[in-house]
Image 1 (cartoon, rainbow, N blue to C red):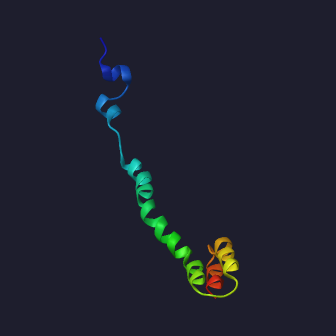
Image 2 (image 1 turned 90 degrees about the vertical axis):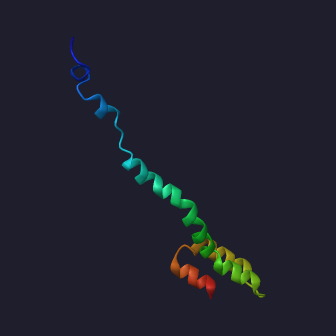
Image 3 (image 1 turned 180 degrees about the vertical axis):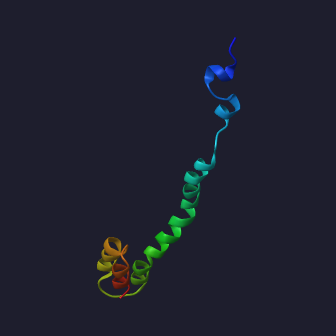
Length: 81
């Protein structure tokens, strides 16, 4: 009678052994996401919040400018001005 290694073609312990290294490489960014996205979102909205606290015209224009072009550094700085 053939052994199980001869039937399967590999050692059972090797076949069952799972490497979780690749799982952690994909899981760590997902675990860090809640700690990275909120600060970026808060930083992104700073020009809008400053303009909403100041009296004057163009409050809506600053909000739109920051929303549409705030992701670029130039648009973010223009929204500050």
